[in-house]
Amino acid sequence: MKTIDHNFGENILIYEGAIVPESSQIGPFSIIYPGVEFEENVKIGSSCIIGKKPTTGSNQTKLLEFTETLRIRKNTIICDQVIIYTGCNIGEDCYLADKAFIRENVNIERNVVIGTAVTVSFNAHIGSGTKIMTGTNIGGKMKIGQNCFIGAHVCSVNDNNPRLNTSRSEHQAAIIEDNVVIGSNVTILPHLLIRKGITVAAGSVVSKNLTEENQLYFGIPAKIKNKNL
Ligand SMILES: CC(C)(COP(=O)(O)OP(=O)(O)OC[C@H]1O[C@@H](n2cnc3c(N)ncnc32)[C@H](O)[C@@H]1OP(=O)(O)O)[C@@H](O)C(=O)NCCC(=O)NCCS
Image 1 (cartoon, rainbow, N blue to C red):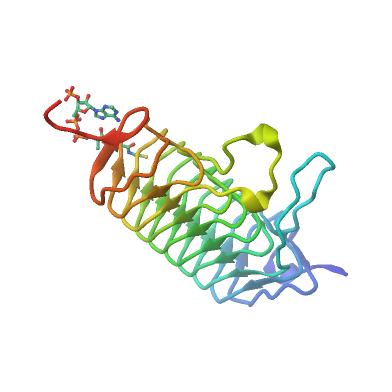
Image 2: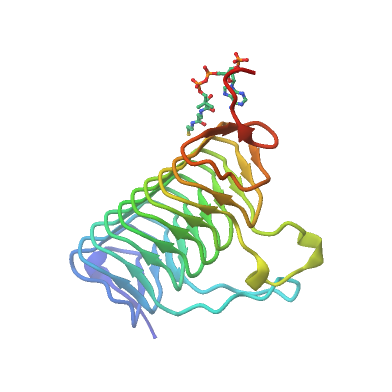
């Protein structure tokens, strides 16, 4: 059930059941699995794996259900060594840099930038116009609003007590509203809310809800910056 399609060049593997229009560009050594659907003018770099199914180990928490389709909308650019699991929607005009790693059921709206070596974990949602910089970890089920900026090496986690082995249905990374800026190296604990327009200073740890819209928070734990202190 697999085919090597030379219309796109040598050493590219496109499985039967993938929908890959002629306007697509695909780099060498990339694999496109069944259930993948590209809209027009999608560019895929070299050594990408598109439409991978998750595999489970005996000591791993149970996966959430996932669909076996993966849609990549028009004009989106995927660079080299990118892995995207099945069940995702990647909006139009997005840019995924080298080594971006997107787990199952992720929904990325239009015009989003995913930086080099960013990991987006299962069932996360990223709003249109948002940019996420190098090496950041977006935790499972995290929701990020529109036009946010997430700096480099931010770590958002989805489980407060990993040793309890709770199921993924109980895991929930933070919810971030529109126009939020998260500085580099910020850690964001699970089940929290960061309201509209907030900036979180580089290196902060967010351990409580940040509720005051458009304010600057900083420090460990992150608190509103009081200019008089
Ligand atoms: C928080 C931030 C926006 C403040 O910028 P600013 O208003 O220009 O602040 P200043 O540089 O004038 O610093 C004001 C005070 O806050 C302190 N401060 C600044 N950033 C801080 C931080 N991240 N954590 C703790 N204190 C900080 C300064 O030392 C200074 O202290 P002082 O009043 O005792 O002298 C900025 O420092 C920041 O963290 N930006 C995020 C940058 C980033 O991560 N970009 C992502 C690129 S990928």
